[in-house]
Length: 61
Image (tube, rainbow, N blue to C red):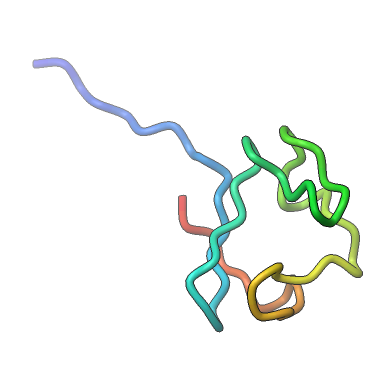
């Protein structure tokens, strides 16, 4: 039987609200271009929904 593997999405979920950062989409309102990995976001970047810092995000796959 073939084995199914899932490819990491690079998405990160805010622990304080429903927002999930998707690197394929970026965050154009804060000047983050599509294709920008979460790890490369500037330290001053905050959740666009609740303004939580990057430290409040966890990997969601």
